[in-house]
Length: 250
Length: 272
Image (cartoon, rainbow over all chains, first blue to last red; front, top):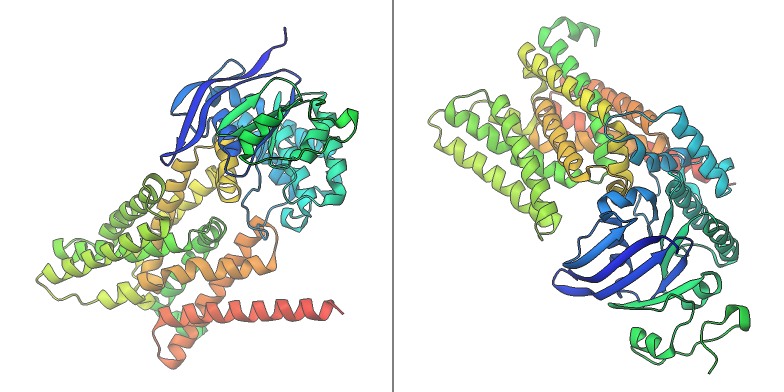
């Protein structure tokens, strides 16, 4: 039996009196590479924030590595959709990645030589070591995303959470980008959320659909009815040959 | 210039100005990067309530302002984070409430308020030795706090949400940063006045951002630019007999403009 990494039971979230998540049940197991798709405003980011303990559900139970989210999140590496930083912010790539090590050091304590080595190691994993002294705002969208992945990896997380990893990434490097994620998925559990069904379905191992309500069967198959419920309109799914098939044959 | 330094008030003025430049060089960088320019403006203006309070109860206005500015900083921070009010709305309300309280307090106090104008628009030439001692103490508090929590303030300014994920107590640090701004307001009050404080917190740091991509260098450059503005501004003020606070701010804005123009000129030339 594989270890359960994330467990949500009957989770309801109201965000400013609006229902964001309705009775969500989800189990994610060690080694899963789960893509959660759904329309914008469907609660994808909210779900990630609940897992990270940044948002408390109105009702329901959340366990992260068997712990409450505030404690369990130390095993999580998080890559947000679009960090709202100022493009001229005077900081280099190395220092951005170093922020990830804060979790190990805590208030007032200084970063150590060990932290520096971990930063270099993480930058190497995402192929960005040559850019370590560059100012972060000068990099392209895809390069910045790699740096933020490195920042998430620098603590050797057991679970990687990615919010819209393709936002701001050039179409021509998307393929390479997913290959990076696929390599990482051999070493850790990954959950990514996206509104882009086609791109996600090619690479992930499991797919869930979310629009307030979560549809997930622990596999890569999505029922057409589920998807239509999620997007609330008829959807034409394109099945790209057998290895990339999302829909059951019908 | 040298002949001016034989006057004690001139030496005090220069010392106060340089100290203010140093503190603004450090806090101003965080004010710019964390984008709390207008919150800082709100703190500065609402601190006028503290001056009124000083007059009303016959206390040292600097001390009552210190108290009042920290209370304003915490209130603005708390209201903008914990209530559903938009931040700029909270600033608009507290900014004017603080100033109005100041006006009411001054009105209620029986006596005449002789140096009121100085607190509002700065009178660097009236800085006394005891003012400098107080400025020095506040500066030490600010520098030690920044040195201690440098890595936390960096995360807070760059990506607060991520800070929350890795366990940075972001809200507490945010309130601490606003409190440091409040201390800076008190330091700057005598130099440029409450109304103009925000210029000194913003302009040198904004100018230095054109010149470097390194945070620590930005602090250094910002300090030097602030000091240059003080020295030149004081000299203009003396030469043309104009209010010192305003000339210092205008000098600093002039340096900002020139830097901006030169940087763009340089970019234009190198683009060929």
